[in-house]
Image 1 (tube, rainbow, N blue to C red):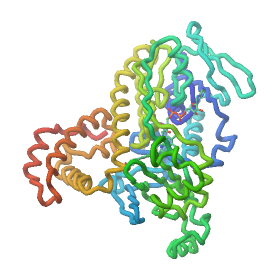
Image 2 (cartoon, helix red, strand yellow):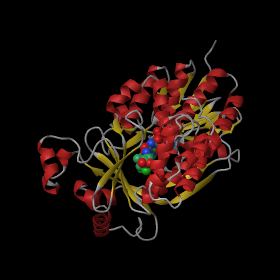
Image 3 (cartoon, rainbow, N blue to C red):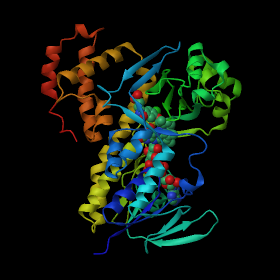
Image 4 (cartoon, rainbow, N blue to C red):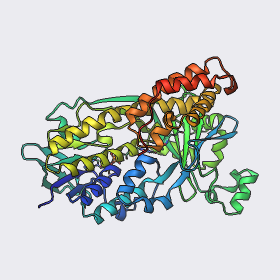
Length: 469
Ligand code: FAD
Ligand code: 8R5
């Protein structure tokens, strides 16, 4: 039997994984990617950008046979390292032990690993091919290369993995109302770099970091953590890179004070960081240059009512549900899309109309749920992590999880360490948060809380968790 043909637009993280999973299952896969081949063009040069990989992401990589290749180059992040205003730090563990952690991986290395696997599985990936338009009557993609040359490609089934600015989505919107809505967050971000310890001028370093540098240590801060500088309405975070540097991201309102608009000159940047992030200033030798030279990142949530047109085209990953970054789940949720779609297509290879409709039916509630939880987590990270009643709730959350391992799981853990559907995590999280709020009201320590009374409520309000996946 001839293998059904599938065309994928975009060989970013989701497109490359999906190409692997479908080629493995015997589909004839063709991919068109706008950028040059990162294996040739030196994607790894320039800035080091990293991503947090969690269980949903690892699951996709495992199915593509890539866990062994990524694990050695991933840096474990055990928890949040909170940096307060006077430079004190405190680690809040994400999970119970080192089996419940997240991993920092380099985007370039991950993309290359995924592309190698897709090609090894038989997918044909064409680089420097940008989707321009689609002729829906003849199901033909119109593609263009950088030198202006054009190409047409007949494609009966088109999968759009071309990211938040999807060209396929725009082409679909020409013929169908997708119910598209973009909700801007009102905050943007700037990326900065803490170089590897060897590359930081010695005169910037404290006595103990000078010793560490002399000993040849790689990192200027604790490597096995996601660092957070929570400052109320804004924050910085930093993720470690395997070679010893950290990528720092400042998240800040677009307008108002302070804001990306008000912190705009070299002097303002220096003064703002010295006031709010003093401990990290000496570790970012190019602070002003990074801030003024790097583009401002845009943040918001993309919602669509429809992800597909009949059996012809389907959007997945950021193309259909771009979200704010604060749960570190954009790629993770996109990988979950790729796995679910590959499984549905494998089961019904010749009924793409039914598969696309079923995919949307299953995934849309989960996409909406993680979009909402990602927005919540901004408030938690920037404002709540260092406050007393939050810390008490967190302690009780963990205590109840210990007392009721089959019923209670902190929402962060459901999202990050399991494949429990996001919509279930959201719904159970609401019940748990309601109980937590009630139990800690007026209390200042766990000793004052009636745990036996809490136990009864937990059993009454929460079913047994879905089986571990
Ligand atoms: P992309 O990875 O954006 O890939 C889209 C691809 O389509 C690109 O290769 C692009 O060149 C190509 N393309 C675009 N237009 C066309 C066209 N017209 N024709 C052909 N090809 C085209 N997620 C996490 O889970 N954890 C994190 O810690 C995390 N950190 C992030 C940090 C940063 C700085 C950013 C920006 C995002 C982060 N995300 C994170 C989100 C994550 O990057 C995205 O959710 C994920 O990359 C989505 O994958 P995708 O394949 O849908 O889109
Ligand atoms: N994305 C992340 C988390 C949750 C951390 C926690 C948060 C940077 C543009 Cl902001 C952010 C998380 O709750 O303690 N896990 O992974 C990744 C995050 O931001 C990424 C690096 C980012 C888009 C810039």
